[in-house]
Image (cartoon, rainbow, N blue to C red):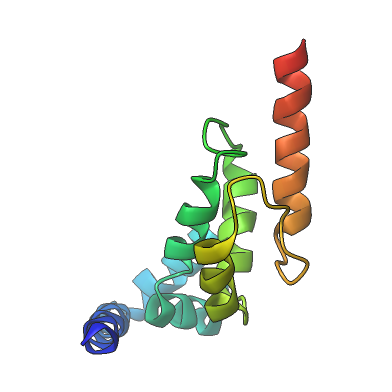
Length: 123
């Protein structure tokens, strides 16, 4: 039943994207700095926001603030990540102090944000 709800949501997002005028689609793509093909994929997949939101809520990153450009890059990487299923499985099984998994293309950025927060907290 869950997959059916997800498929319905994806179809709705895709239909919304398709219903936009060509000018509006170009403007949205320009705002996100994505091609129309990439933006259509993001609309169908939901933009990876569920995985990213869960990762950002982990204790190591929960109370940090992020520059807009960093968040945009994190979102873009999650949106086009081929490891979503693996990511969700890791999130479900990893303890709060687990290191970022090697398969995660955002692992370096997450670790860097975590180090920055730790060094600021020590000051």
